[in-house]
Image 1 (cartoon, rainbow, N blue to C red):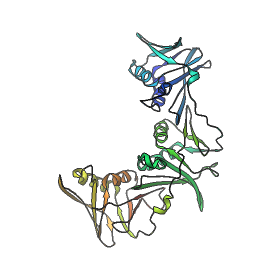
Image 2 (image 1 turned 30 degrees about the vertical axis):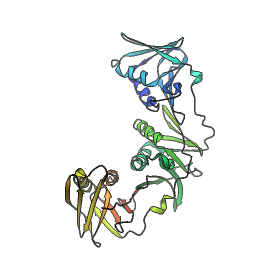
Image 3 (image 1 turned 90 degrees about the vertical axis):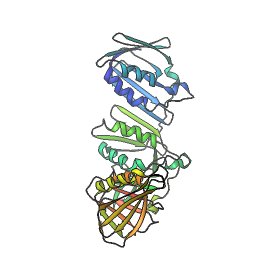
Length: 370
């Protein structure tokens, strides 16, 4: 294999594929990126961790077609440190990859391309397209609620399912047991028979990075066990989480009749200020509701106390409720409008947060004892 490629082009492709590669691997070839140069002036870069695979194509001048695999992180670091505008020459022969750019020369050990594992997609019967902006919004408004607890592995991703509530919709939900985030969008054509699936956290993170460079639509293909995202030059394929997502609709409160209307930005800033003294362990902020007056306070045995009044519309009976300040700020940070509705019941019941009843996103937050 022999090819010449512009540094910026190679760096961009490698930055996408190397982030899939785990730093520690018991199987040496999983540390490598596959480089496959074809006669039509295309280099394929591919990396996998056996659950997630990225396949990206970049343009190059190919003198001699061929393929090899080389350490993904090492190659990425080399290309990153090369001077801007450099032409990078890659030559693979006799178990080595020679990298030449200007006066810099490197020789890296390689492993044969034939040993490189590829995820077998099988049949992907459900296929539809989603605008990249819609997919970005779905991810941004839900992924902060994905659980990181490995024991409840079925919560380690975003749950996608379709339903028909007068109009056909696609719903995406994530929860860690303390909070729930759900986004509803119109169902895309082709998603009618879509299975309910859980897309893993790592796939979501890589997809979100790639979406920043995609204009237009993203092709989505899936079966009950795999999903593929077609992002133009890059294709992301992932195994799905094999588990049952809980019936989250049961925790969405419908009878919370105490409604607080408040500016999310000033509310978030107030929570942020008083929680400065909260310790890592507690993170609890107390909210005392009175007619059109909300008092936020934090009491920390180590650091002291803090309190702040924030303006809001509230006409129901006064009471006190506590929340994890970080969870509350995560939710408020996703609200784009100038007003957010907080639907409360009592100090122990789940609280519903949304912009209004027409908003695509809805959040549920469990209170804390304070």
